[in-house]
Picture 1 (cartoon, rainbow, N blue to C red):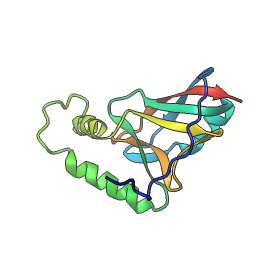
Picture 2: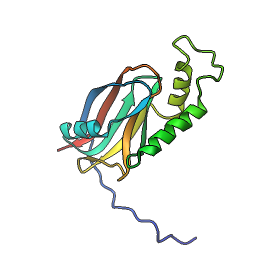
Picture 3: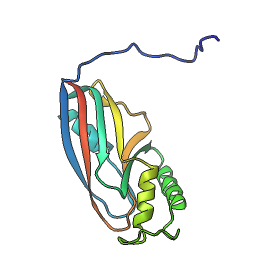
Length: 157
């Protein structure tokens, strides 16, 4: 088997994790929708004086979630919302409905997405791709106050 010429990799770099910096980001949602958190997380990385490592983004809720998605064309986010609604519609005959008909579908949508993300930090910046952003997805119809834990682990400047 021959090696493919279409692959390349930078030289490995090694750092010692000398810093653990944490913060809680509070987001007031307006109901179902998607909120871009990228700027706030980048600000946290700068304030943490992060150089090399990783930032973990964790949402403390089971009816809202996180995702990394395209940030160039807003129709992508609309289509993703449509897809989640098709996968977990309100009228699917859910048993759990004590908190409203949108609660159980919200739990399913969270299960299909993520409650935690990890993004590398390289040279003091989030190592996101050109068209990537970090989003909070609110799955409930009512406004909610959501807490997102941010934690950088790595070396600082």
